[in-house]
Image (tube, rainbow, N blue to C red; front, top):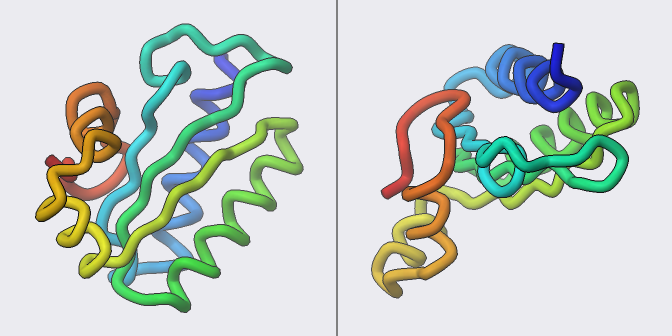
Length: 111
């Protein structure tokens, strides 16, 4: 099985378990979502939306633990609902890219 797929599957499972209702969305994007990632060279890009700052910290911890155990470097960007709404109002190019090319691991798309 693909190292990245296993890492993303575990991240989604553990994030849902530890954050519960504080996790809104978890999205894989970048080279892993496009199927272009190279083990040992590529990072694993994740965009997440959570309800609060405490959930941000918890998700960073979860991603670090899994990445360390699996030898995968997660590059995690986490925003609260308010921060996501601000990105939408600014018509963020970054957010549009995630909405267009990302794969939803949990929750809803952000577009």
